[in-house]
Length: 129
Image (spheres, rainbow, N blue to C red):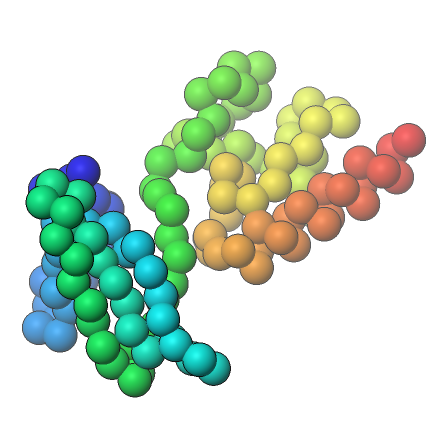
């Protein structure tokens, strides 16, 4: 339940330059409504329980979970800024150990790139058998 925007400073600075972005502290997206496209978004204030509906025929959603990789448990692996370095086959510095998705060192963190990483890692791991 953050009282302020929880992201890296660069993103905070960019948001502040746009007057068409509203910051809704300690709130969660709790519902998405629409037919063929997103038409309404429901947000719930986690402190008060108050719900707010945003209606906009041009609204949309972009899912982004977090900015801190959950790699603390991988103590045998070398980390780079908290992320796991891999080669083009998604293999780590330890032969036979693969990593995929947003825990890896990469420039783009999107579902599409995470899925691609997983496919590559799976194919490469299977080829080792």
